[in-house]
Length: 182
Image 1 (tube, rainbow, N blue to C red):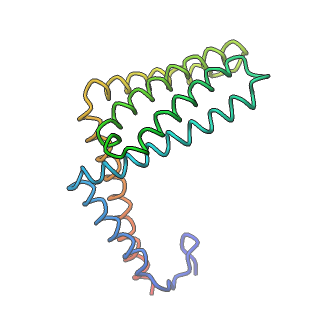
Image 2 (image 1 turned 120 degrees about the vertical axis):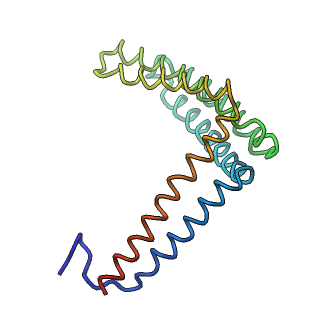
């Protein structure tokens, strides 16, 4: 008999339990050790910004003949490469400045997305207003991060730790459900 696509007999039910315990411990570490957690998150964001810059440069150059606003994507890519590279090569700076850089990056990203939304409107794309909405929301939140960087640091760590905790609890519960099927 199958329930939710799972045979009623589960082998090695304890693997989700192990994973859940590790995730709960990791999320607890994030919540109670925010500085080292923020360091790791800073390196991750720096890498994300650097990769995003590379992709924007490749995208803009490959579409330079067909996109009117391709230069903005190129500028975004160069900006992201510069910021991401600076943050990766200087981890201490990354911990100190990642929130400010992230705020500026999000602000610039939001502003270029406003331009994209207006370009979508100009070429007749339906629902271009959603792009404009999300772009303006991005700009608003970038200002909040820039005005109060401590809120940004706490938010980054908290919003990374809480979902990991929830997934860990879910895995533990799932393990005991699997065990009951034995």
